[in-house]
Image 1 (tube, rainbow, N blue to C red):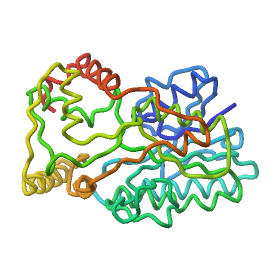
Image 2: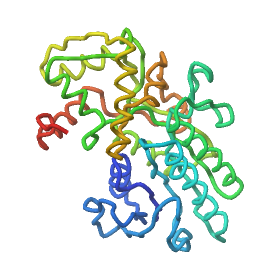
Image 3: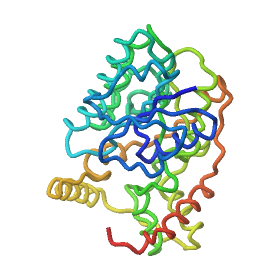
Amino acid sequence: MKIFLTGASGFLGSYISQALLQDGYELVVLVRKKSRRDHLQHPKIQLVEGSLPECDFDASILEKCAALVHCAGLVKALSRETFFEVNAKGTEKLAQLLLNLKNPPKHFLHISTLAVMNPEIDGRNFCIPAAKCHPLSFYGQSKLAAEETLQILKRKMQLSILRPPVLYGPGDLELLPAFKLAAKWLAPFYGDGKNRFSLCHAKDVADAVLTLLGRPKKSDIYCLDDGHSLNWREFFEAIGRVMNKKILNFPVPTLFFYSAAFASDFVSKLRKKPQIFGREKLKEMKIKSWVCGYEKLNRELGWEPKIKLEDGLKECLAFYNYRSLLTSHF
């Protein structure tokens, strides 16, 4: 069975591609001209050069695929317009491409995010329809727009939307600053450090993708995590344990975080290189709980997480040490 996969050169996409190959699928992978391809050299992978939102590739190849897994997208950008150009418009053009095919894939699996919601307005059920969501950030708004535009596919195929929480695992560089701080016995956190959130290892998300592809049901929305929530204090303490460090937790004044976010945005625009942390991300950090759970995915499809937090953090630490990243200055 062939799967069409976007975003395979990214962090999560690389895990999804490997999981699909190990499960016996053949892949047709959309890659940009400058995409990293070293992990995509495999006899069961067919590379198709193209990009989003242009969709500048031969769409007929999609008719040979049983499903499309859409993992491509931006998690950081310099402007709202850039987020929407790739995440929203790119997804819309992909959907229109499918609607124009005589024999499109039977299943469209879209990787979204918890950030399409505002839990303090929308409640704690992270599987609610897109029409009931009120995202805080430009990123969340662009991913919600992508979800909304995909609704037109329901009349032709199954539409599955997966909303992961914060992801981590070897290869991820967004948690590196936290490990660098822990290496110095430091753990600065926003407010009182009691805001809670969910995490999920990228391997578990890839496994959930396999589950959704392997046991098709009706079109629906699912969220997932590793089964345990934690706050910022507990998160840094967990990193400290895997590094054998006794972490000094200390709250940082809100004004400092706002100043740091403003400075980060300024430097990002100056260097034309977006960063995860900024004023937009701070909007999400202020929420008291991003705890989502995986009950629906378990109840309907039998999925459950396999990787415990500290085991996953040990994998990250090994990756950072192998690449000598904890001593780097970037």
